[in-house]
Length: 555
Image 1 (cartoon, one colour):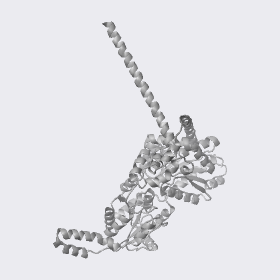
Image 2 (spheres, rainbow, N blue to C red):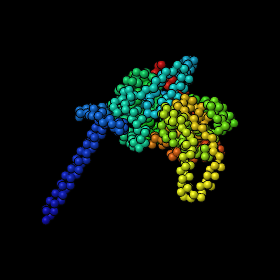
Image 3 (cartoon, helix red, strand yellow):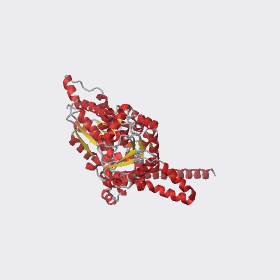
Image 4 (tube, rainbow, N blue to C red):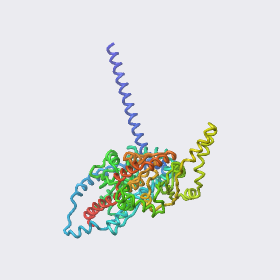
C-alpha cells in the first residue's frame, strides 16, 4: 500500500511538473508572439495614429507597400537594440554637457563678448502644417529674433512632409480631415497619448526617419533649433545627439509648447535646454509624462504677435481704465465702427469654419429684441461664400421668423391673448444691430482692442491674444483632447464661458453686455493672466544660451 501511495505521489509530481513546463513554455511562446506582433506593428503599420488617420481617408493601398519580410524585421530589431544602447550612452554624455554648460568660458575682451551676445543667429524652427497656431507661434518668435539679434536668419522646416515615410507625410492632410470629425479626433488623440503608444511611436520614428532628419538638420547648420510642434521633439533630439557625436558640435534644442491647458505627451522630453510653457497645468503634465526637470521648465506664456504687446501698451495695460476706454473708442473710429455702441467680434479660424451663420443669426435676433445697440463684426477668413451670404442677407426676415411661429402657437392655444401679446411686442424698443462681415483680417490686434466681447472657438493662440488686450471670451467649440484644457483655462481664470448652442451663446453675450460690472471684472481677470511679451522673453533667453554654446563650439 505504501509503495502504491508513493508511486501515485510521484506520478502527481511528474504530471504537475509537466503541466508547469507546458504553461511556462506556453507563456514564453505567447511573449515571443506578442513581441513579434509588436515589431510587425511597428514596421508594417508604421505608427498607428497616422495609419488610422490615413485609413479614414481611404489610403488602404499604401499599406500594402510597406509589408516587410522576416529578415527585414530581424534587421529592424537589431537596429533598434543598437539605437537604444546608443541613446542611453548619449544621455549620460548630454547630462555631463549640461553640467559643463553652467560655467561658460569667459572671453578676454569684454567688447568682443558683448558683440557676440547680440550677434546674428541661424535659427531652425520645427513645425508641421496641423493648424495655424504652430506657424503663428514660430513667426512671432522669428520676428523677435530679427529685432533683438539683427541679421538673424531663420527657417521653418516640416520634417515629416520632407523626409518622413508613409504615413508620417500624410499628417497635414489627415489633420485637416479629422478636425472636421471630433469623435474620430478624440479617439485618435487619446490613443496616441497612451504611454505604450508613445514608446512605439518614438522607436518607430527613430528607426525609419532619424537618418534623413539628421541629414536635413546638418544641412541647415543652425546655431539653435526650436520646436513648436509636439511631434518634432523626440526624433530631432536624437538626430542632434548623433550630430554631436560625429562632429563634436552641440546645437542647443528648445521646445515652445503652444497649448494653454492640455498638452500631448509627445511635447515633453527631458533633454531640451528649456521647455517654455504657458500655465501651471502644463507644468504638471510635463513633469509627469516627460520627466522634465524643474530647472528646464519656464512658465513664459504663449508666444503671440508683437502687435498685441504694442496694443496692450497703448491701452495702458488695462482696457477698463480711462486711458484704455479712450483708446478703444479711437480704435473703433479708425476701423469705421460706431464708437458709441458695443462691438462683438465673431471668429471661426483662418478658414472661417464652424457654425458662424447660426451664431450670427442668434446674436442679431437676441440683441435686437433685447434693445441693445451693437455692431457684430464677423471674421469669415477665406470663406468667401459665407461673407457674401452675410452681406446679402435680409435681416428683417431673420427677425420676424420667430414671431410668426410664436403668433401661430398663441392663436391656436388662446385666441383672446393674441391682441395683448402683439401690444407687448410692439411696445418693446428694438436695438439697432449692424452686422459687418469681413474676409481674411491682418489687423486682428486692432479689432480685438475695438471689441467688447470675443465669440470664437477655443484655440490657444486666439485665447492668449484676447487675454493680452483684456477681451472676455465666449467659446463655442473645441477639438477634443487637444483644446479641452483651453476651455478649462479660461473658465478657471474667470474671463469667459463655454456654450455650444447658438441661442444660449447669444443669451450669454446679451447678459454680459447688460452687466458692465461683470464685463469689467472679466477684462481685469484676462489681463492678470496674460503674457503679451512672451515671445520677446522667450527669444532673449534662447539667444543668451545659444550664444554661450556658440562660444563653446568656437563660433
